[in-house]
Length: 512
Image (cartoon, rainbow, N blue to C red):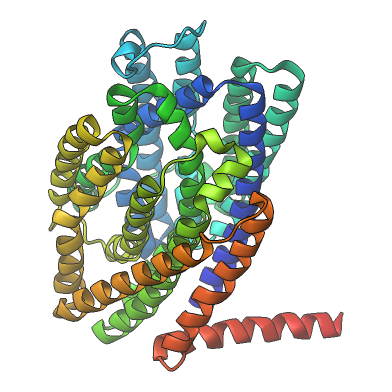
């Protein structure tokens, strides 16, 4: 129960922080669009992608060392924790400097990434501010991973989003007063530094041994294990970043920078959903890692099936909402001229569905330390994604970029990642998972298409129609889900947890 309570607490605070962060992000985006041109919006998306790719320098070291923290934390092995964190510190300082050096060296080649270079003064300085913001984040962030591995994500969440919301407030005020992009970015750099320093001081208070000087060198076998896992994760990291962070680069080079700006509005919504959903799985992973150490195969499979049903509900509900509401929402916050046709939206929604369903697989694989067996798959996926996206972008335009991402995933990772988890982690056949997955995917598509078609017949003011569609999207998919799964063991497991939480809240209010 303590493990479950920790996960619930972490998810609770993560949802609160992420929801407030998303609200702040949308307000900033609306102000950004009103005071700065779509070209700046395109630059913002493009440079963010370039820096995400530069973050490949981390090469999975963080995940490998975080995994190595689970056992010493469970055993309260302070000496080993000190050794691991000392190694972590050295590696992350090096990474920060390498990112700054690589980012700076790319400055003369910015025209390679942009089809038509915009007439904006100081574009190189804008880019270097992005580089600086990414590089400085590594100098203190290694302590963040200890807090997360120790199932204290709620603390990290409170610190991160408090400073993020403060940053957004300052940026909004600055845009209103000055309408200047440079100051907007400088505020971002300053708040990144302050937030990382504040969390670092908090970690020192929580784990006083971090300040001790008598640190032993990490044992060779532990170092070898970390290096082995890092090599495997490096390939997954490279592949993952290429797949998830090159869309803007391909669009900018083969379609146009203006389209990057249009896509960035859609991506802001999708990214916001990913960030909320990620809170669940980043909160889940340490608990699963701890669970994996002391439970048998059957208990592990039970936990996976429960987590998989929860993941399907998230993907099912969010995909339907996106299909029905996406274009109306973009029209409201940005204007009709920023709206994509429905074919592009459909492709984005399908990519979103696959990505969410993949998260529970990756969460369990990471918690179980299954890094090595299929280390090349993500690299192959990345290569396919780049080739297919470029070819289809030239032929079909922006929709081709998203089709490339979809096709490259379905060709290999869709089949291999789950197979490896079942074979190495559960020692079970994976056939039942594939059958269930395909049935659920078809079911989701049918409900999404049906609701989209029916609700597209509505006419009237966009905002009022949007509100009505929101109400329908909240009620109908969840009612259908409830009727289908109300008698399953997995559904009742989560129902009991929710009922238990509500009872505790009710009792506290009655006492108060």
